[in-house]
Length: 431
Image (cartoon, rainbow, N blue to C red; front, side, top):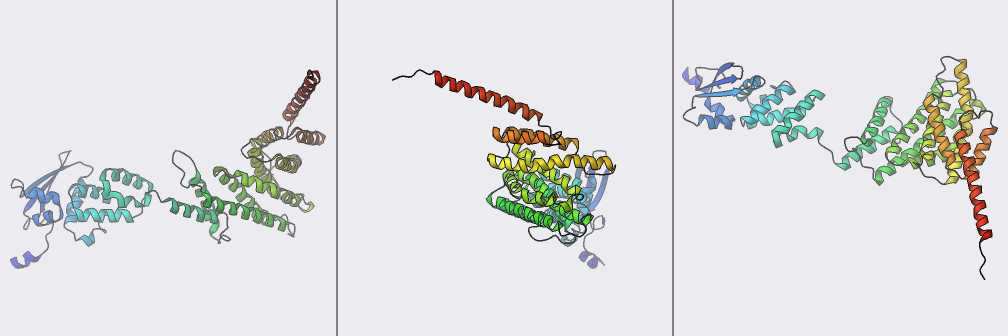
């Protein structure tokens, strides 16, 4: 019988074979005794090996711990008696493994420390658990580095690769979205904005020439695709179809999103230039007689996107030659002047008509146009103001401020010219 017992594995709490008594005490006076085996403790813990080597604690060890980590100490003792391959199935949760890990490090239990790290590195975390792990890891030192691998800063090349892939998906330049891809496309657009955002943290992506090249190709593709879809509208048999408008609106919304991205990347000039190049074609289609009484959502969205172009140029964020600035304004000002009263009228006729220029949009476009006009050569200003005052819809946009400043500048310029001529005429002639 004794021979059989000698070959049985040691079990925690077995008083018959135990040669060490361990007392766990917490700061509330709770004490619990555990019957242990020196062979197990010294083999798997350098802390216990050192303790039990002293003649004063060869058979009795007292450990003080807090109430919060009392259970973690008990679980560590249980793990000491388990084979290493059973550790990963023992932990059960992030909280448990994290608590045991801290005790294992304190007691220099290398096997348990390794299995805790392996478990925490592999298991999913929620937001709260991630915060707890980061807080604990800051105190644990290098041993915790593998756990934090998933939240370490990535190499720039890797981040750029993810950005480029996400951008191509968000702009459909890698091919049409699969049936389930719309949600992923929206997510890609959101995360691209997040990567470029400048807040208290550094932007995730640095915009280099390669990134700019990919983005510019995406911009050209989006405008080309939008023009193509817009042209196909004229061949549609049912122009009142919500499906037809939704498809073309999606393309224009993507262009709108692109304007926000290019602003963050300091590439808004490329957007404005492409908008100017395609404006005549876009307006030629949208003002076709076939679309006269349909596609109100699309017509309003065009004004919204155009408003961003007018703001960028009008307030000097994008620098273009005067000839291009005049072209943009002479194309889009008549369209805006015509559409504003039409949308207002439709809104008055139909209480549920959703496509109306709200007050903020009206004010932002009006302010941008005034600034836009005042930065043009005076003769071009005169042409635009004269045309504005002839129109039946001179009410919007209100260019009164631009008109008054033009009058003042013109009179001042004439006075300066007259004074300069007089000075030349009165200058003494020396022979």
